[in-house]
Figure 1: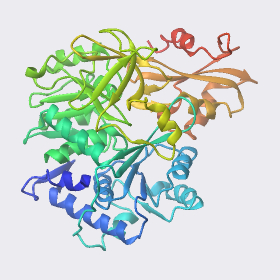
Figure 2: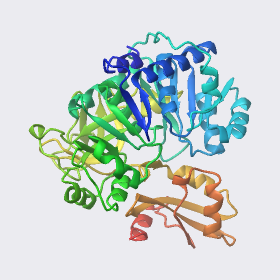
Figure 3: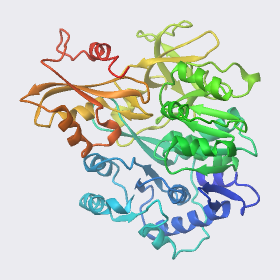
Figure 4: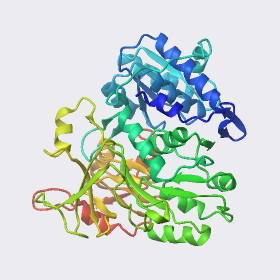
Length: 499
């Protein structure tokens, strides 16, 4: 089934009721239906080949949400990209995914369109967060009636770019069936109710804000209180109107700094995308009376585990990400491939209808990441207790998660190593009271590097969340007998840098 058609089936009977409230600008369910129909008709008029990718590199907006729905109902493939990406990063995504359409913020049209056209993209449109842009101008000419495309569950619906610790990003292919399975499972497990109102302050270019939060609300016919960006004061002001909130740990840390947190109407707080400190979990309970529900997912798999929502389903345990969700297979294996005993640390592997089919144009890499019996190797290390609750211990790769965003050290190192004055670099993550982890670069000198100047240069080349918050200069990097840089030693050495 086409994912849009499935989400549309969840819209309330009264299509003129409010679907999205963006600071008093109200969008009805009929507005979502009509707007996405007009955009889908415009995309159809472009005569794109079946399965064409629509890359979106634009700031968060309700119109961006409507575009997402339009791509789904047109039967095309949605490719969300972080609007903070710079030219060198965007070049890889456009070259690799070869989209038929690129949508960008008007302020970036000059360099984005030049890059896109050089790589064979036929259409580039603009979309801004103030309801303007050439995409909306074109769609305004189209009919507001559209029949959604017919898709099989295995048909590709979206590509999310993720990465390991080496090489450039790879595209995780998610089908209509993957996304619908994930949304329906969470609708039941998180006890979505008819009167739920979701306060949405997450970005919409990754699974948390888009596929977990938005798909969940639409499937349930629940109103969204929409913020284009997270600001603690703005979120705190609207909490009394909401029943659900989903955030990353950094958001909860910043909300705790607000003098008033009125959560009397709230039913559920969810945290994910990065580990939540147990101190934050406890302080949130003290301030609001609510236990934050922690869950675990990946771009390749959507949600995998979750603490219970309803008391009758079990205890909500801080510091764990709960048991496997219904329909999800979860196992923890030793290095020799044998199952771990309870509380024994091992490698986390999963399978289920939510797990992606593979990486875009990378069959060999896909084969490497699945076991012979069909389980996906998450790359995470954890332990299962006797009740089946999973606790994540760390990552078998050097991924850094800062403020809920993934940072891949090898990519940052590649940019650093090209800068004057830098001999070698090692990028690590260290504990940070606000961001969970902070990106730190340890470099050797090839001349007289100025750490502050290096940071300023990187800010113009890569997304700000990837830029090291501190650069440390050492005479040499620690290595083992095989010549490999010992990042574990560096993480230990600088663990207290932001204490």
